[in-house]
Amino acid sequence: MIRALLRAATVLAAALLATTVMAGSAAAVPISQRFSVPSGDNCTYGYTEGVLEWRSTAPTKAVRLTGVVVDRPSANEPIFCRDDRRYTIASYVAYAGERPIDRAAQRVDNGVLRFDFVLDSDAWAVGIDRVVIQVCRTSLDRPSTVPDYCGREYTFRPTSIGPNGS
Image 1 (cartoon, rainbow, N blue to C red):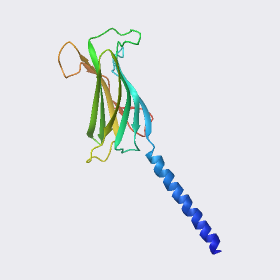
Image 2 (tube, rainbow, N blue to C red):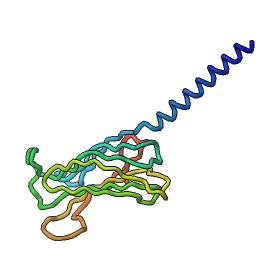
Image 3 (cartoon, rainbow, N blue to C red):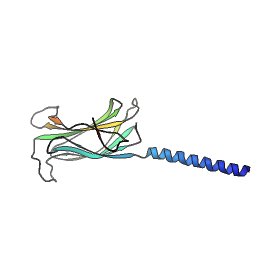
Image 4 (cartoon, rainbow, N blue to C red):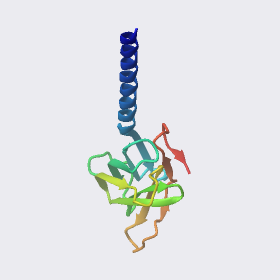
């Protein structure tokens, strides 16, 4: 009787340990999420697309972004957009609540730029709960830091299937 009780307790402890280990490793598996964000114009002169890799469920400490920023017309694509003398800049901002905690921007003119970078949470932030991506277009003909126009912001969260516009 005692032997059966000890065997049952051992089996139960092993099952609990296995469940805990599997739950811990499942939380550590990165969540990959595709994104595609346009510049908002009729010709889609500029866009960015790629993958957000959340290092864990929200709030996470880091999000890896890989992909491209495209400004049309580009060399290896049929020309259906005339050169409008603007460049494309894509911005990527990580938030913890309402506070922006890390950001990056990628700029390209008449081409394709590949990127691979990480947005990190700082020591004071709880973690990243969303990433907001926006694509803007700025004139080459006049020096300005203000874009001529921007597409809408797209918000990505690690638990959502697709973007939620803001």
